[in-house]
Length: 338
Image (cartoon, rainbow, N blue to C red; front, side, top):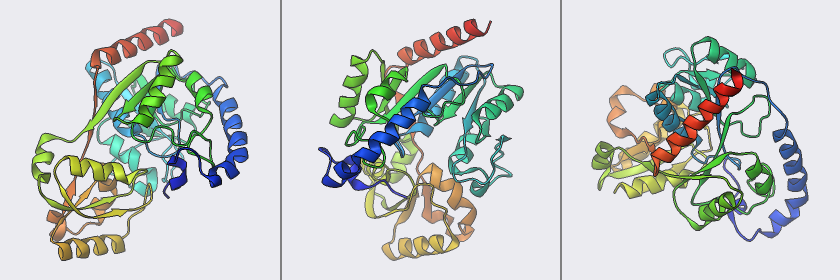
C-alpha cells in the first residue's frame, strides 16, 4: 500500500486535522513504548530506523554501515522482522533456499550482502546472530520497538519529504511526536536534500544530535547503460518517485512509471503485462534491487534482456565522522559489558 498524499502536505489538510486526535493518542502510546528498557543482546546493537511510516532509506543505510563495520574488523549480522514473510523465526536467511513469501523481500536483499536473521521477536533473533558468530547486530527497522536494548539509535530521514505534515498516524506519517522521538535517538542520517529534510536537521542539531548527511549513488556502469535509454520505471517501494528521480538523474528517458504498493508480491500476470508494455513502447524495464529479488524468479529467460536492475549505494559525506561515532559506540558498549 502507498502512504496517503495528504501526509506530506504542509500545513496539514482538513482531513489531517480531523484525524489529529487519533494521531495524538497513537503517538503518545508509541512514545511510551519507545522509552521502555530492552533486553541486552550480549553484543552491540545498532538500530537503523525512521521517525515515519514507510520507506526512508533504511536498507541502503544498513548495507553501508555493514561495509564500514566490516572494514573495522567487525562481523555484523542484519536483524529484521521479515515484513511480508510467513516465517516468524528466528531463522537465518538463505537466498538459495528462501523466497520472499518465506522471509520478505528486504531480508532477501540484505542476505546477498551480509548474514541476515529474520525474527519477529528481536531478542531471540539477536541471540541467534550472536550464537552464529556475529560481533554486533544491525537492526533494520525497529526504532519504536522496545524489546531489544540499542547501543546506537539512528533515524533515517528522507531529505525531500522530511517528516511530512509533522502529525502522527493516521493524521500524518510520524510514528510518535518528532520531539519525543528525537530524544530517543543518537543521530540522524539525512539522505538527499530539501527544505523538509533541512528542517528536521535543524531540530536534531538543536537537540544536540549529530546529523550524518548522505546520498544515494548509482554505479557508474549502470549510469552509462541508462544514459538516454528509454525505460519503464517499475517499483514496489514506499516512495516510488524516489526511484523515478534516480533514473532521471542517471540520464534515462522515462516512457512510463508503474508504481505498485510497498512490498508488492508480483505475479506471473504482472510480469506478462510489464513485458507486453515494454515491447509496445520499445523500452527496457528498470527495477530496484528490492523488486529484483521478487521479479527474477518469475521472469522468462527469453525476455531477460528487457529487465534492468538499478542498484543504489548510500554514500556518507563525512565518513570519518561516521567512523568516530561507530568506534565510540563499540567502545562504550563493550566497556559496559565487561
